[in-house]
Length: 115
Image (cartoon, rainbow, N blue to C red; front, side, top):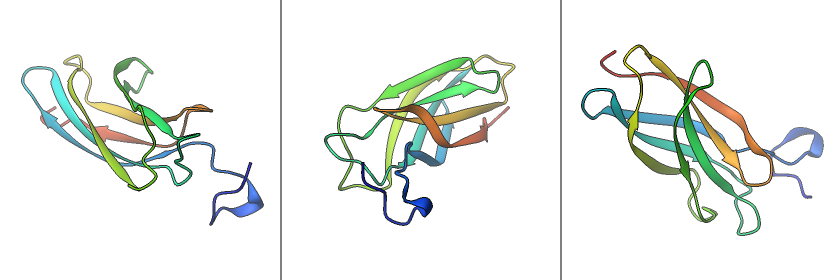
């Protein structure tokens, strides 16, 4: 495999990175997420194929699968709407997924608005 330009040590980037997220409350215990992801290696042969929203304890609340590469759109933003999150949860983790290596890379922890 080839290295991703700008990386040290000549190793390829194994995972996409979550750069940011906008969160909108949608009623009691439901939230919409607009998540921005960077995956500079995105090609039809290998790309960022999803992201998830989880609790700090690892419980998964929502996941979005991505069905194609975003090579011409880096970074890119995709949504995940209507995620139900229990009332006691105030902070979540958002992680992106690579179709070859799974979840990893830079994740973010965000506070849920209104909690």
